[in-house]
Length: 265
Image 1 (cartoon, helix red, strand yellow):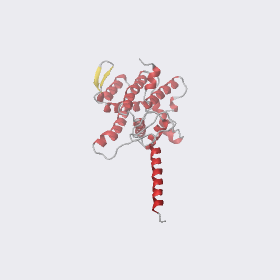
Image 2 (cartoon, helix red, strand yellow):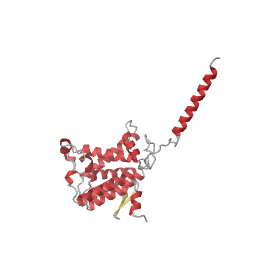
Image 3 (cartoon, helix red, strand yellow):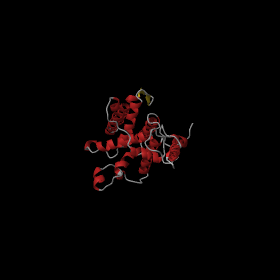
Image 4 (tube, helix red, strand yellow):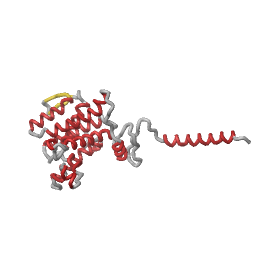
């Protein structure tokens, strides 16, 4: 049986960083190190006072320590990790882009006053669960040892649990909408013959490669040489650039010799 430290080190990078950040944010709130209003999403303060950090920090607060908070953290550890190790295996940048796209989609939805919420981390977690349910629709899930169902129905089961426990349903529904939008643009629309496909931006690939965590197949950029992990595409060969350069130099020298031989006396 692995120790907590071994389990922590075995976690994939994106899910680990997001889960730990959410845990530290709630721990700091529990210790009264900050006021929750200072990290909440208020567009008036974002545009009038340029408090742009609110566009990011609101996604890392899953609420104070409580059963709902622990449940959301378990969702990240269970379904976020499973998604990153499964569908997004060796696609660290793509998984990071999925979360970024989900966050951007939720920020756009929050412009509508009725859809606004001061903290949209729960919606982002629910987006992860929704995408997992579409990627693993036939996986068998057991909820509290009482109900067994397929993975495709998992978001709806969690929605029903929040209804029973009296938790707000709007964050869950917004997360499902963001998850379906991402899945439609990346999977369903291209399979239907659509020309547009939502691909991971080059900048995200570059940041992940420079960061040096995880692995990435067919990344358009090479990793930082000082990083401990190499991001290699399928056609990447160590020393390939050096070999090509040497062969070009030899070819140029041979061409010069042939020209000298052809010159008239």
